[in-house]
Image (cartoon, rainbow, N blue to C red; front, side):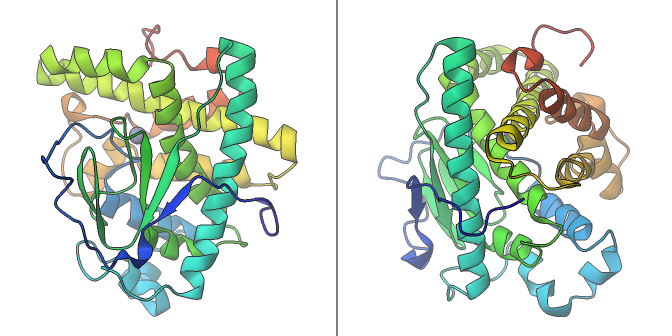
Length: 299
Ligand SMILES: [Zn+2]
């Protein structure tokens, strides 16, 4: 993705200097459901890093300079902000600005709606959200209560090692997927599905979650297509990078990689095949109409 020197978003709340303070949530301890991120964090971080490094998991597991940055649940916590952190923050900021311009157009055109941008909270180690505490182990997520996207900067430190090189669009996809949840929120979709899930059986609630997540993938594709047209910012191979990332964070693949037999009833994000397909559908069409994961019998 071409991003260097481009305009960044003003809607970044940078909490990286907070030293991890404030964890435990706001007074009153309200905890409401966060909307699952792009996948389980440890797994997604490893999966994307593996991919970013050219698909060699050994290179990841044996460390090198980036080894320690994928530790799940360790470290972090208000450490020094490195030049890599700064690069990552800039990349996220440009990506977020791109989502603002694209969704302003698309929502106006397709839904006659004004787009209210989300705020993206960058943190390091741990922080709080109105949906509960967030740590690097939580993974990127969207909180519908405070309408913010939460991203641990270490996640992007990891990604930043490839920024400007071939790995950046996987990171853009993760940001776009979370912003996709915000668009669902604006469209009233999250409210409805959350209410449904609260009274459904676990299997039905999970099935609804899959539809929500696949639509967020599709919305990420819609963003990518419109960004390509509007800014000429996509480079050859970018969309394939995102599709490859999607294939590595399907529930079936994650469960298999964790040594378990895939259990479809427990899926919350969709299979690798489904995630790639809906991302691609959004990209090919470039319209939210192409993302009706709720009205189809063949997900
Ligand atoms: Zn999600």
